[in-house]
Image 1 (cartoon, rainbow, N blue to C red):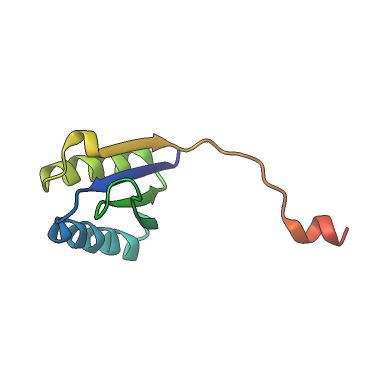
Image 2 (image 1 turned 30 degrees about the vertical axis):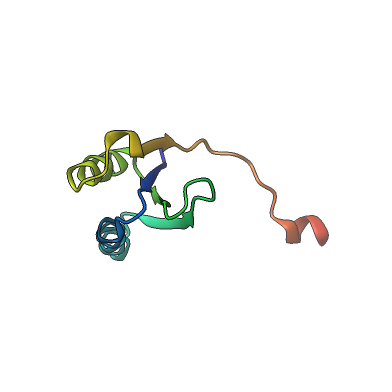
Length: 96
């Protein structure tokens, strides 16, 4: 099952942000992870959210544990299991 990890990085922790993005880049080169998005939290100025997709939950769990080991608080890392949903492709619907 696919999984998504959300990491919330506090303001002023650019070192941690860069370390996580570097790890995600290495995992991405091996096809083991994909950076989904990086966003700034409007309610917590300077705080950053990083979302990383994984094809297998075990890889997501390993990444989460490593992120906590790198300095993120356990409460700042969320592991989500993705549920498959049906989505119609727009072109076949437009041109049957």
